[in-house]
Amino acid sequence: MKTYRVNEIFYSRQGEGVRVGTPNLFLRFTGCNLTCMQETHGFDCDTEFASGRDFTLDQLIAALAECLDDASASQRANASASQMVRNVDPTNAENAPRRVRNAVHLPSTSQSNADQDGSINGRRENSSPARASIDNTDPANWIILTGGEPALQVDDDLINALHAAGYKLAIETNGSIALPNGIDWITVSPKVAEHAIRQRTADEVKYVRGYGQAIPKTVVDAKHKLISPAFDGNVLQEKTLAWCKQLVSDNPEWELSMQMHKVWGVR
Ligand code: SF4
Image (cartoon, rainbow, N blue to C red):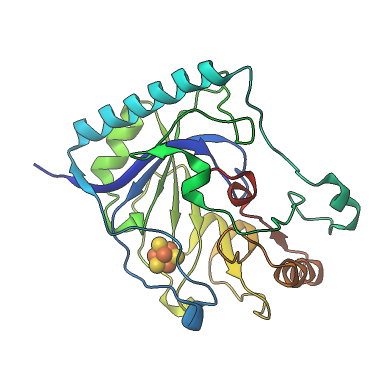
């Protein structure tokens, strides 16, 4: 029987891109076809994608439903204490360029993901007031397919089964592998040279940019073109942010997309 190798399943807010702030199940697949490093890509991959276990489609749908149930129960338990953190430093807003989606409060010290997310086996538990909350008025019927590189495993059977189970599907891909049809929201975040990009249509295309890196000449046809300042761990260096703000100011067809989950301290 066909199986899919999955690194983790968890529930959280989308931290970046046009869908920032929305609740989603995250289905993170094992494996990637690239090795992103500072020397070659301008940033180091900060994602553990080597581990995982195999799921049949039925097992996967059951695990997703269980995760959603756990998240709903946790949300109810914490509803009175938790709050969504948005626009954490409004004092920066008047200095931000017009197309900045979220003002950002620069963390003053490096923070540990392990200390912050409180997750066990990919499930977030016992949200504290400092973390993004789960809003139980949201149906949370979106799944974000991510990795590693999800396009290594996502296929028609998976898409059809998850749609039949009532979910909408978003994907975050490095663009080096063409996607099957039917995915509801496509984010291409290229990590290869433009000529090597195989997924050339998307809802949004997002490039991570470090200090000194130029605006991309993308081959991806997308409604939203986003620049995402590279974080150093969980810290965004001021000069990197300033550089990226200048890039989008000089190139108004591009927008700034912050990795807000790192600011919020959620997964
Ligand atoms: S494509 Fe993404 S997951 Fe793969 S190595 Fe690069 S940053 Fe990491």
